[in-house]
Length: 283
Image (cartoon, rainbow, N blue to C red):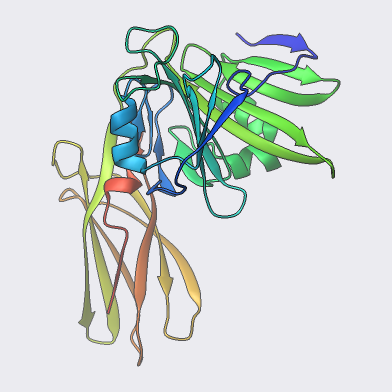
């Protein structure tokens, strides 16, 4: 059941005051699966500060909620993209500015390649807030007048906010995950584990092999892919995997390089783990 609150404001991860400048950039993945209440690409809720910096590198800057705790660290990426990490102490409470602090909230804007298990990313949320509301049917929805301001599903551990930035009023979408009030069920994943390309008579034939997280071949999965032809033309194609977990795609042969890229894999009860998949091949 949806709950509605008329007009409210929300600060992103809590008030921050003290700034620590540290070396910028990190190996933050730009594409991957977000599991609500559990993890984003490369980092899980409950990971230590040491583990986060091992995965992402040093943050661009950190801010403090209580003096010197460096509880809120931000990775400023290319363009306007960013990822922010909210830390608490190893046993909860105030962060200690140490490697043993743990992640309580992950927040990001931009990063359209970060997609939740129900297909929501920042780009879709910006263009179609109603799609977010439909995807999280048990969420609390906050409005500012007639405009959706936030969608929060505490049972899943996901929050989507539409914030207006200045001086030129611009709406920006921030998404965040946090520990759910009830643990979500374990997600079964699908992965593209192999792509082969070969010339068969007058055609280029691609075979994409799909497995689950346990290494089992999965039939009945719909694979969406995209050919890039030598002319630069792009052609979208789909096929369903057979009993051996293989989807096949063919296009007419000509001189030049052919490239096939897996865009998505869908099957009821599964989510596509693109981050740990083989996504493209060329011949």
